[in-house]
Length: 364
Image (cartoon, rainbow, N blue to C red; front, side, top):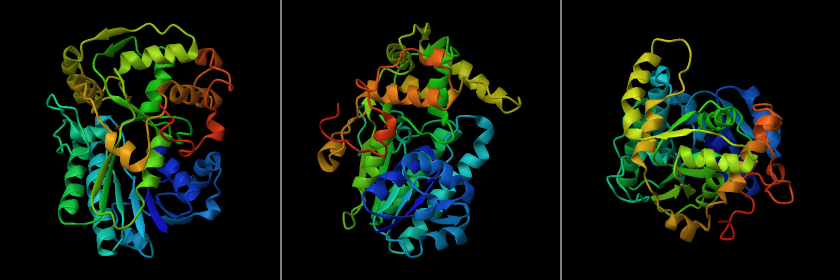
Protein backbone atom coordinates (compact mmCIF):
# COMPACT_ATOMS: atom_id res chain seq x y z
CA UNK A 1 0.00 0.00 0.00
CA UNK A 2 1.01 3.65 -0.34
CA UNK A 3 1.91 4.97 3.11
CA UNK A 4 2.46 8.57 4.10
CA UNK A 5 5.16 9.08 6.75
CA UNK A 6 5.54 12.36 8.57
CA UNK A 7 8.85 12.92 10.33
CA UNK A 8 10.51 10.57 7.86
CA UNK A 9 13.87 12.34 8.06
CA UNK A 10 14.03 11.93 11.83
CA UNK A 11 15.52 9.06 13.83
CA UNK A 12 12.42 6.91 14.29
CA UNK A 13 10.87 8.10 11.03
CA UNK A 14 13.84 7.23 8.79
CA UNK A 15 14.14 3.72 10.21
CA UNK A 16 10.38 3.32 9.78
CA UNK A 17 10.76 4.33 6.12
CA UNK A 18 13.37 1.60 5.65
CA UNK A 19 11.25 -1.01 7.41
CA UNK A 20 8.18 -0.17 5.31
CA UNK A 21 10.10 -0.26 2.05
CA UNK A 22 11.57 -3.61 3.10
CA UNK A 23 8.00 -4.84 3.71
CA UNK A 24 7.00 -3.88 0.18
CA UNK A 25 5.11 -0.65 0.79
CA UNK A 26 5.31 2.48 -1.35
CA UNK A 27 6.36 5.41 0.82
CA UNK A 28 5.48 9.08 0.57
CA UNK A 29 7.27 11.55 2.81
CA UNK A 30 6.00 14.87 4.12
CA UNK A 31 9.17 16.83 4.86
CA UNK A 32 10.06 20.44 5.49
CA UNK A 33 13.11 20.31 3.18
CA UNK A 34 13.55 17.94 0.23
CA UNK A 35 17.35 18.12 0.34
CA UNK A 36 17.35 16.34 3.71
CA UNK A 37 15.92 13.12 2.33
CA UNK A 38 18.89 11.68 0.40
CA UNK A 39 21.56 11.93 3.15
CA UNK A 40 19.14 10.54 5.72
CA UNK A 41 17.97 7.45 3.81
CA UNK A 42 21.24 6.58 2.03
CA UNK A 43 22.85 4.95 5.12
CA UNK A 44 19.76 2.72 5.33
CA UNK A 45 20.25 1.46 1.78
CA UNK A 46 17.57 3.63 0.16
CA UNK A 47 17.55 6.17 -2.66
CA UNK A 48 15.63 9.41 -2.34
CA UNK A 49 14.41 9.01 -5.91
CA UNK A 50 12.49 5.88 -4.92
CA UNK A 51 10.42 7.84 -2.42
CA UNK A 52 7.54 10.19 -3.16
CA UNK A 53 8.25 13.50 -1.42
CA UNK A 54 5.96 16.41 -0.57
CA UNK A 55 7.49 19.52 0.94
CA UNK A 56 5.57 21.28 3.70
CA UNK A 57 4.77 21.35 7.40
CA UNK A 58 2.44 19.18 9.48
CA UNK A 59 0.95 22.38 10.89
CA UNK A 60 -0.27 23.48 7.43
CA UNK A 61 -3.78 22.05 6.80
CA UNK A 62 -3.61 22.40 3.00
CA UNK A 63 -0.25 20.61 2.81
CA UNK A 64 -1.47 17.82 5.08
CA UNK A 65 -4.58 17.30 2.93
CA UNK A 66 -2.38 17.14 -0.16
CA UNK A 67 -0.05 14.64 1.50
CA UNK A 68 -2.76 12.15 2.53
CA UNK A 69 -4.46 12.25 -0.89
CA UNK A 70 -3.91 8.98 -2.74
CA UNK A 71 -2.47 7.16 0.30
CA UNK A 72 -4.01 4.14 2.00
CA UNK A 73 -2.29 4.53 5.39
CA UNK A 74 -0.21 6.99 7.39
CA UNK A 75 2.48 6.81 10.07
CA UNK A 76 2.54 10.13 11.89
CA UNK A 77 6.03 10.25 13.40
CA UNK A 78 6.56 13.98 12.97
CA UNK A 79 7.21 15.71 16.29
CA UNK A 80 9.67 17.98 18.06
CA UNK A 81 11.66 15.98 20.62
CA UNK A 82 13.36 18.53 22.83
CA UNK A 83 13.65 19.03 26.58
CA UNK A 84 14.88 22.59 26.05
CA UNK A 85 12.23 24.94 27.43
CA UNK A 86 13.12 27.54 24.78
CA UNK A 87 11.45 25.27 22.21
CA UNK A 88 8.08 25.28 23.98
CA UNK A 89 6.15 27.13 21.28
CA UNK A 90 7.31 24.96 18.42
CA UNK A 91 6.84 21.81 20.50
CA UNK A 92 3.19 22.67 21.13
CA UNK A 93 2.46 23.56 17.52
CA UNK A 94 4.00 20.46 15.98
CA UNK A 95 3.25 17.84 18.60
CA UNK A 96 -0.35 18.75 19.39
CA UNK A 97 -1.72 20.78 16.48
CA UNK A 98 0.21 18.67 13.97
CA UNK A 99 -1.34 15.53 15.40
CA UNK A 100 -4.82 17.03 15.22
CA UNK A 101 -4.33 17.97 11.57
CA UNK A 102 -2.74 14.73 10.37
CA UNK A 103 -5.17 12.41 12.14
CA UNK A 104 -8.14 14.52 11.06
CA UNK A 105 -7.07 14.61 7.42
CA UNK A 106 -6.33 10.88 7.43
CA UNK A 107 -9.75 10.07 8.86
CA UNK A 108 -11.55 12.24 6.29
CA UNK A 109 -9.56 10.59 3.50
CA UNK A 110 -10.48 7.10 4.74
CA UNK A 111 -6.95 5.91 5.51
CA UNK A 112 -6.58 2.62 7.39
CA UNK A 113 -4.59 2.28 9.54
CA UNK A 114 -3.75 5.71 10.91
CA UNK A 115 -0.62 5.14 12.99
CA UNK A 116 0.26 7.76 15.57
CA UNK A 117 3.71 7.57 17.19
CA UNK A 118 3.19 8.59 20.81
CA UNK A 119 5.68 7.98 23.63
CA UNK A 120 5.81 6.08 26.89
CA UNK A 121 6.05 9.46 28.63
CA UNK A 122 2.45 10.22 27.59
CA UNK A 123 1.33 7.69 30.24
CA UNK A 124 3.23 9.26 33.17
CA UNK A 125 3.09 9.34 36.12
CA UNK A 126 2.63 5.60 36.69
CA UNK A 127 0.75 5.90 39.98
CA UNK A 128 2.53 2.86 41.37
CA UNK A 129 1.30 0.63 38.52
CA UNK A 130 3.11 -1.21 35.75
CA UNK A 131 2.08 0.64 32.61
CA UNK A 132 0.57 -1.07 29.57
CA UNK A 133 -0.92 0.12 26.30
CA UNK A 134 -4.29 0.14 28.08
CA UNK A 135 -3.12 2.57 30.77
CA UNK A 136 -4.91 5.94 30.72
CA UNK A 137 -3.18 9.06 29.36
CA UNK A 138 -1.10 10.77 32.01
CA UNK A 139 -0.47 14.35 33.00
CA UNK A 140 3.32 14.85 33.08
CA UNK A 141 4.74 18.39 33.48
CA UNK A 142 6.85 20.37 31.05
CA UNK A 143 6.56 21.51 27.41
CA UNK A 144 7.61 18.25 25.74
CA UNK A 145 6.09 15.73 28.16
CA UNK A 146 2.89 17.75 28.36
CA UNK A 147 2.64 17.98 24.58
CA UNK A 148 2.89 14.21 24.19
CA UNK A 149 0.18 13.69 26.82
CA UNK A 150 -2.10 16.23 25.11
CA UNK A 151 -1.48 14.71 21.68
CA UNK A 152 -2.28 11.32 23.20
CA UNK A 153 -5.68 12.67 24.22
CA UNK A 154 -6.26 13.75 20.62
CA UNK A 155 -5.42 10.27 19.30
CA UNK A 156 -7.57 8.54 21.90
CA UNK A 157 -10.56 10.70 21.01
CA UNK A 158 -10.28 9.48 17.44
CA UNK A 159 -10.05 5.91 18.70
CA UNK A 160 -13.13 6.38 20.85
CA UNK A 161 -14.99 7.65 17.77
CA UNK A 162 -14.11 4.41 15.98
CA UNK A 163 -11.35 5.71 13.69
CA UNK A 164 -8.72 3.05 12.83
CA UNK A 165 -6.03 4.84 14.83
CA UNK A 166 -3.11 2.70 16.00
CA UNK A 167 -1.00 4.26 18.74
CA UNK A 168 2.59 3.16 19.39
CA UNK A 169 4.62 4.10 22.46
CA UNK A 170 8.40 4.13 21.95
CA UNK A 171 10.65 4.31 24.97
CA UNK A 172 14.06 6.01 25.14
CA UNK A 173 15.25 5.34 21.58
CA UNK A 174 18.85 4.41 20.80
CA UNK A 175 20.65 2.66 17.95
CA UNK A 176 22.65 3.52 14.82
CA UNK A 177 21.93 6.06 12.10
CA UNK A 178 20.42 9.01 13.96
CA UNK A 179 20.46 11.73 11.27
CA UNK A 180 20.11 14.75 13.54
CA UNK A 181 21.62 13.42 16.79
CA UNK A 182 18.46 13.34 18.88
CA UNK A 183 18.20 14.05 22.60
CA UNK A 184 18.92 10.46 23.63
CA UNK A 185 21.93 10.10 21.36
CA UNK A 186 23.40 13.35 22.64
CA UNK A 187 23.04 11.96 26.15
CA UNK A 188 25.02 8.83 25.23
CA UNK A 189 27.64 11.00 23.54
CA UNK A 190 27.95 13.23 26.59
CA UNK A 191 28.18 10.28 28.98
CA UNK A 192 31.11 8.92 26.96
CA UNK A 193 32.66 12.40 26.94
CA UNK A 194 32.48 12.49 30.75
CA UNK A 195 29.87 15.25 30.93
CA UNK A 196 27.55 13.42 33.33
CA UNK A 197 29.37 13.36 36.69
CA UNK A 198 25.99 13.33 38.48
CA UNK A 199 22.98 11.26 37.39
CA UNK A 200 19.50 10.93 38.91
CA UNK A 201 18.22 7.70 40.38
CA UNK A 202 15.17 6.01 38.92
CA UNK A 203 14.64 4.48 35.52
CA UNK A 204 13.20 4.56 32.04
CA UNK A 205 12.83 1.97 29.27
CA UNK A 206 15.43 1.83 26.49
CA UNK A 207 14.38 0.63 23.03
CA UNK A 208 16.29 -0.03 19.81
CA UNK A 209 15.16 2.20 16.93
CA UNK A 210 14.97 -0.85 14.66
CA UNK A 211 12.56 -2.48 17.09
CA UNK A 212 10.30 0.58 16.90
CA UNK A 213 10.45 0.47 13.10
CA UNK A 214 9.54 -3.21 13.14
CA UNK A 215 6.47 -2.43 15.26
CA UNK A 216 5.36 0.18 12.72
CA UNK A 217 5.78 -2.27 9.85
CA UNK A 218 3.84 -4.93 11.75
CA UNK A 219 0.81 -2.74 12.52
CA UNK A 220 0.25 -1.70 8.91
CA UNK A 221 -2.67 -4.04 8.38
CA UNK A 222 -6.06 -2.52 7.48
CA UNK A 223 -9.28 -3.58 9.13
CA UNK A 224 -7.92 -4.00 12.65
CA UNK A 225 -9.65 -0.97 14.11
CA UNK A 226 -8.27 1.09 17.01
CA UNK A 227 -5.25 -0.54 18.68
CA UNK A 228 -2.35 0.39 20.97
CA UNK A 229 1.12 -1.14 21.33
CA UNK A 230 4.10 -0.39 23.52
CA UNK A 231 7.49 -0.25 21.84
CA UNK A 232 9.20 0.12 25.17
CA UNK A 233 12.11 -2.25 24.72
CA UNK A 234 13.95 -3.09 27.91
CA UNK A 235 13.05 -1.79 31.37
CA UNK A 236 16.30 -0.34 32.67
CA UNK A 237 17.42 1.35 35.87
CA UNK A 238 17.87 4.72 34.20
CA UNK A 239 21.01 6.75 33.73
CA UNK A 240 23.04 4.90 36.34
CA UNK A 241 22.52 1.57 34.57
CA UNK A 242 23.00 3.20 31.17
CA UNK A 243 26.35 4.59 32.28
CA UNK A 244 27.38 1.19 33.66
CA UNK A 245 26.41 -0.60 30.46
CA UNK A 246 28.21 1.97 28.31
CA UNK A 247 31.25 1.39 30.46
CA UNK A 248 30.96 -2.34 29.79
CA UNK A 249 30.58 -1.78 26.03
CA UNK A 250 33.53 0.61 25.80
CA UNK A 251 35.74 -1.11 28.37
CA UNK A 252 36.12 2.22 30.14
CA UNK A 253 35.51 3.38 33.69
CA UNK A 254 32.87 6.12 33.59
CA UNK A 255 32.72 7.49 37.15
CA UNK A 256 29.44 9.07 38.16
CA UNK A 257 27.56 9.81 41.37
CA UNK A 258 23.90 8.77 41.58
CA UNK A 259 21.70 11.27 43.42
CA UNK A 260 18.05 10.64 44.34
CA UNK A 261 15.97 12.09 41.52
CA UNK A 262 13.62 13.74 44.01
CA UNK A 263 16.49 15.90 45.28
CA UNK A 264 17.35 17.00 41.73
CA UNK A 265 13.80 17.97 40.73
CA UNK A 266 14.03 21.47 42.29
CA UNK A 267 17.35 22.01 40.52
CA UNK A 268 15.74 20.97 37.26
CA UNK A 269 12.86 23.36 37.84
CA UNK A 270 15.28 26.25 38.37
CA UNK A 271 17.24 25.30 35.23
CA UNK A 272 13.98 25.16 33.24
CA UNK A 273 13.29 28.79 34.13
CA UNK A 274 16.89 29.89 33.63
CA UNK A 275 17.06 28.14 30.25
CA UNK A 276 14.50 30.55 28.82
CA UNK A 277 16.85 33.52 29.25
CA UNK A 278 20.34 32.13 28.56
CA UNK A 279 21.57 31.64 24.97
CA UNK A 280 23.21 28.24 25.54
CA UNK A 281 21.75 24.85 26.44
CA UNK A 282 22.05 23.71 30.07
CA UNK A 283 22.24 19.88 30.25
CA UNK A 284 20.10 19.49 33.40
CA UNK A 285 16.60 19.23 31.99
CA UNK A 286 13.75 19.08 34.48
CA UNK A 287 11.67 16.81 32.25
CA UNK A 288 14.45 14.25 31.99
CA UNK A 289 14.87 14.21 35.77
CA UNK A 290 11.11 13.83 36.16
CA UNK A 291 11.01 10.79 33.87
CA UNK A 292 13.78 9.16 35.92
CA UNK A 293 11.98 10.07 39.15
CA UNK A 294 8.81 8.33 37.94
CA UNK A 295 10.84 5.10 37.52
CA UNK A 296 7.95 3.63 35.51
CA UNK A 297 7.84 -0.02 34.51
CA UNK A 298 6.21 -1.11 31.26
CA UNK A 299 4.69 -4.41 30.12
CA UNK A 300 4.88 -4.90 26.34
CA UNK A 301 3.49 -8.45 26.32
CA UNK A 302 0.81 -7.50 23.80
CA UNK A 303 3.42 -6.26 21.34
CA UNK A 304 5.32 -9.52 21.54
CA UNK A 305 2.27 -11.76 21.34
CA UNK A 306 0.26 -9.96 18.66
CA UNK A 307 3.05 -8.48 16.52
CA UNK A 308 5.87 -10.93 17.15
CA UNK A 309 8.31 -8.10 17.96
CA UNK A 310 10.43 -8.73 21.05
CA UNK A 311 12.95 -6.43 22.74
CA UNK A 312 16.44 -6.51 21.31
CA UNK A 313 19.44 -7.24 23.50
CA UNK A 314 20.32 -3.94 25.17
CA UNK A 315 24.06 -4.54 25.10
CA UNK A 316 23.94 -5.08 21.33
CA UNK A 317 21.92 -1.90 20.89
CA UNK A 318 24.45 0.10 22.89
CA UNK A 319 27.33 -1.47 20.96
CA UNK A 320 25.76 -0.38 17.67
CA UNK A 321 25.06 3.06 19.10
CA UNK A 322 28.63 3.65 20.28
CA UNK A 323 30.12 2.26 17.07
CA UNK A 324 27.95 4.62 14.99
CA UNK A 325 28.85 7.62 17.15
CA UNK A 326 32.57 7.05 16.65
CA UNK A 327 32.18 6.31 12.93
CA UNK A 328 30.40 9.64 12.50
CA UNK A 329 32.97 11.56 14.52
CA UNK A 330 30.62 12.45 17.39
CA UNK A 331 33.05 10.83 19.83
CA UNK A 332 36.72 9.96 19.53
CA UNK A 333 38.10 6.41 19.23
CA UNK A 334 39.50 6.86 22.74
CA UNK A 335 36.05 7.72 24.07
CA UNK A 336 34.55 4.73 22.27
CA UNK A 337 37.08 2.50 24.04
CA UNK A 338 37.37 -1.15 23.14
CA UNK A 339 34.20 -2.14 21.35
CA UNK A 340 33.42 -5.84 20.84
CA UNK A 341 34.59 -7.15 17.49
CA UNK A 342 32.07 -7.65 14.66
CA UNK A 343 32.16 -11.39 15.39
CA UNK A 344 30.62 -10.83 18.82
CA UNK A 345 28.39 -7.81 18.23
CA UNK A 346 25.62 -6.78 15.88
CA UNK A 347 27.07 -4.85 12.96
CA UNK A 348 24.78 -1.88 12.44
CA UNK A 349 25.43 -1.54 8.70
CA UNK A 350 24.00 -4.97 7.92
CA UNK A 351 21.10 -4.90 10.35
CA UNK A 352 19.05 -1.81 9.60
CA UNK A 353 15.35 -1.17 9.86
CA UNK A 354 14.38 -4.05 12.12
CA UNK A 355 15.73 -7.06 10.21
CA UNK A 356 16.13 -10.08 12.41
CA UNK A 357 13.80 -8.85 15.14
CA UNK A 358 11.79 -11.64 16.65
CA UNK A 359 11.36 -14.00 19.54
CA UNK A 360 15.01 -15.01 19.37
CA UNK A 361 16.06 -11.53 20.48
CA UNK A 362 16.28 -10.99 24.22
CA UNK A 363 9.53 2.09 25.01
CA UNK A 364 9.18 5.41 25.17
